[in-house]
Length: 362
Image 1 (cartoon, rainbow, N blue to C red):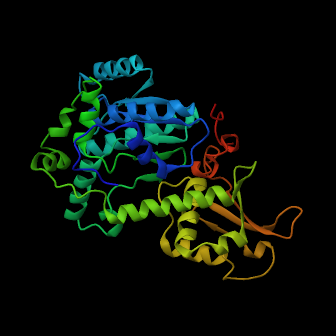
Image 2: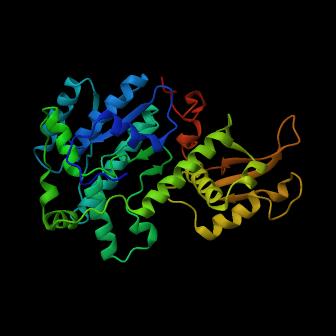
Image 3: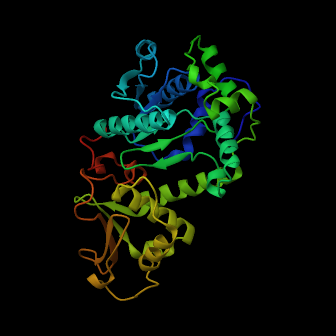
């Protein structure tokens, strides 16, 4: 759904279509938006607020002050005041401590996402929106092309990422930067331009100055996004959250899934429960899938079929009061300092099942 040739503002109906592939959401969705004070994140925040309010939901703007410029603290405060005048709650997160002399952008990115993830975990927020848009995507693909990345890299940034604390959503990937500027202009809102966006020391800034053609949302990423949505819906339908922080999965249901969907679903589960930032290696995942679907050892329940993958234990057991077999998936003993996340999409329709959270969404 690329609209990169359209300079008009993004309206509520358009944004609702952009959000639809990320469902299901809670009955009253709670969202966090990463805000820099720039054009893209301000537009995203206001659009998200207008989307959530009719659903009885709410949003919080998480403003990260990296402390890299003397003006940054004042800009963060000004952004917070602007958003609060629009009825948006805001919170400033500060990156404190010494800053590296090399690799500054990478370090700042890591610190930023660390602060955002922890803030969402502490507040029980399941969805974190970030404002990467079509121009950012084109620049990312150009940089990865220069590095001869593989097919996944050349698909660009993923629209959805499951992290142990929260789901990262990028609803604006099909939208051109010019449309976000028009969205703010139509509301009479000014934004802050970060000077690092035009600093020629940084590769992305150099590309921005040269101009990178926008080809719209890449076919590979559109296909990947569709597969992720199918995986999320399959998880909602077949996973049952357990009081011990694990999940139970009907073995017969797993066997009925197409291989690619089975692979994506298993990868999401172990990445979330095991607490890793990266999916398991393909060969290990495929060996696990053979066990999950019963192509290895078709026997009944028993510890001989139990196995581990990416920090998770898989145990095949007979469901209580039933002849049905189910896989119980839990974090390995000694893993994770806190109770892990069952991927948010699996319980988004039933926030009371979010037992890993300090509190359930209200």
